Length: 304
Image 1 (cartoon, rainbow, N blue to C red):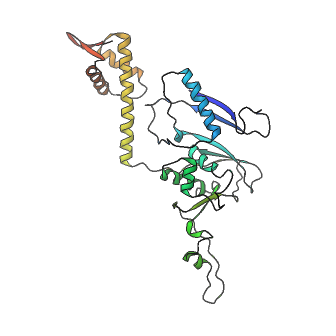
Image 2: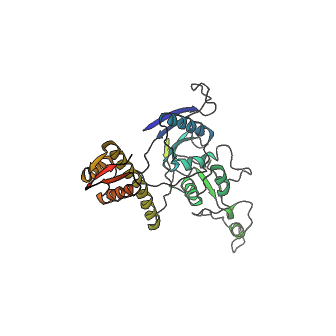
Image 3: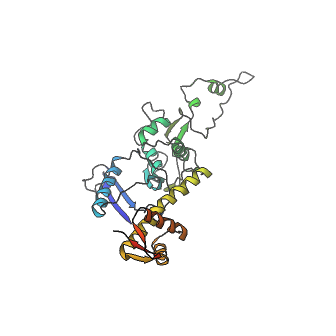
């Protein structure tokens, strides 16, 4: 199911028709646990106040409508459209990004850091609440070192900062063998993100497109991570099988084994083997949710 809300960015109670008020729309897609793979979670993510207000509004609505259900926000599945204005572009751009990318972009909404030289990875971590360093590095790489037409941020390596007087700067401003000034080579930006590298708003960014999709850099899943994902999904699905068996037994009171297997398979929305369902039936018998009918082991009886 889905839910949509609209809120004022500057004042939720202000007239939305006023040109001075920016509007934030939020659309929520409700997914069922067990039908979807396991995704990374960001428990300490720092959402902007505009989205927090809408999230609270949705949670109130959902809890009033469905009592006893628990909401687990999957920010890694979210997408945002961020409107941005660049000096080199006459019209605002719409950047289609994921939630983490949008939070990083909002770090540069007002400034490029206290000293104006940009924000470090640690400073961006504090502002966004994205604790997974490798994920934040991928986000920064996608915004500053992606394909042409998507580099809305600028990465400045630590050893090329103007305050640094290391060997690389001396070599770039030295003289050739004839004593003539040597042309400084354009420094090549490193692909990896160092702890002291800086990121700034790219004031020189330009694009002919009004809408720009910036895809995040995906991390290759290892065999160990793939195994963990399959185990987690399988564990979640066990609960759905248990719930289906108990639901059928509660309605039927007594049922034949084959009929029970068939009805469980009909209720489940994911593929399941009869052997797996049989194991869950044995587990429910051990936990005294049901028992075999005396004199006929092919039938089960529900225990209230």
